[in-house]
Image 1: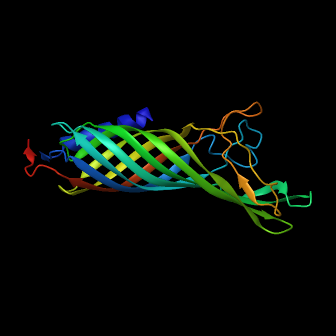
Image 2 (image 1 turned 90 degrees about the horizontal axis):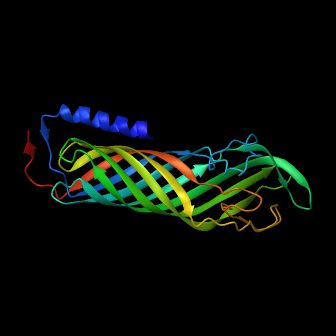
Image 3 (image 1 turned 120 degrees about the vertical axis):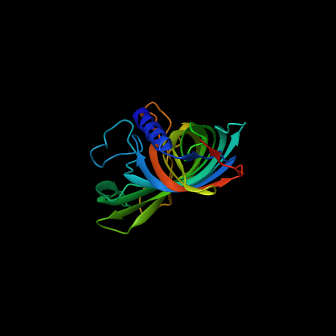
Length: 259
């Protein structure tokens, strides 16, 4: 993470040195972004290789992100900003084959399982812009986040009927730390690239267990079950977010500042 941040700063500085003019920092920025999520342990896992880990992971393989954020910059230099963001994150396990589960009537069957986890995230934070007057502006920021979970798991046994379980709605609180580059293509529009490290359940973990009997003849609702207990360690829901998007700039001084 530190190496990636340093690389972003070096690239931004190089690009800025090659600009013939600089721009005054707009007071308000709006980003519309999308990207790819890389799950980290304990969110990530491979079945059946990781089934005996403690804690057992959520077995997510990949995910995507879509979101929007606003940044309001303070002071004359406008290099420190208050940020507000909202986003949707979704993860999928892909098809896990050979999973053993109950198929009703006290019988055991094997089959395929597909699990999905969805997360709506709202963040409030602070950001520092290193080159507020450059065409290319590197930034670093941190947010306190609220994360609201949902999801489902579909079971397809070799024998018997397909059935589905639902992740019980849950809320957790955490942090997100990241950085990126804002490219000014004009006074009003630009592009943004960035990376963000998310730890989504630092606060609010719960050890409540699943409801239902876990078979095709019951109403199945399961929980995040992420708090440490006497039989298992706590599960951390963390991921790295790679994103790109469009920037919109507002309330910028009319005159550009020439070098």
